[in-house]
Image (cartoon, rainbow, N blue to C red; front, side, top):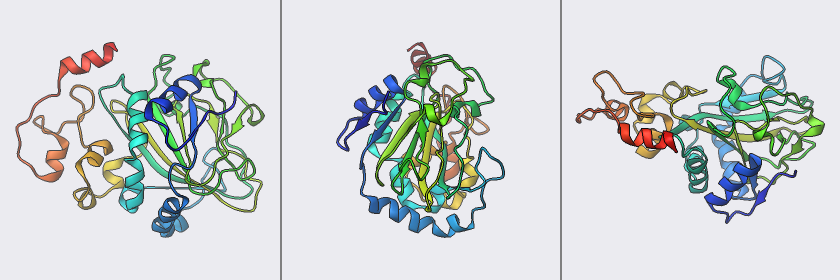
Amino acid sequence: MPIPRLRADAKGTDVAEALGREGCVVVESLVAREVLDRVRSELQPYLEATAPGGDDFAGRNTRRTGGLIARSKTCRDLIMHPLVLDSVGTVLKHATSYQMHLTQVIAIGPGEPGQTIHRDQWGFDFFPFPSGYEVQCNTIWAMTDFTAANGATRLIPGSHKLGDKLSFTHQQAEAAEMPAGSLLLYTGSLYHGGGTNTSAATRYGLNLTYAVSWLRQEENQYLACPAEIARTLPEPLLRLMGYARGAYALGYVDDLRDPLDVLLGRDRPSEFGSLQQAAARARG
């Protein structure tokens, strides 16, 4: 099956429907390519300082630069893009809340072999989540044009409905080709992998991933973004970073204090979340 494709005027329900059906979708030219050029300009010193990966899976010709909330204002805007939040909120609506899982620029250099086809949710210690229960929604913004030649992410549409710990080749996967400014979304259960870069140029992708709040974040947002910067950010972004309770009572500080109150030095009454609301979501 081909990767579903939507126009930039798509609704969150359209994206969520495609993700439910095929596990992946491309929204073409969602923002101007100049927006991603600005991200690259803001991050250039960090991109240049990042070392390549130390193993075949990370990619020995691939550089992965994180900490993007602290380092790029434009990344903060893309994290909070209305279509993304609407789509992610629909896909992960069975959980009480969701949060940022990681922020990362993935720069696949020339000569990089294709990455092993995998599921991102295997990062949770290979726990066998029930089929159909999504715990992640991933986004990759094309900072440069994505082509089959330069290492466009390769996906197997519909594979989110298949069994766990399966093996696939790149020949069985489809390249998510798209112009810069486009957005690829896929679930944590979809089989996929970075493509082979046979071109002479580096492929840059902005990977912003969201996950249910009761799972540990891959990137530690509290340390990746220093407190002095975090205190300057808007509260909706801070809560998405994890400065909020997850599920019923996860993540509070000492005497049931809200983590955002602690960060901002506010003195407010402390309490658990709503057990009734959490239970209602869990029941679907």
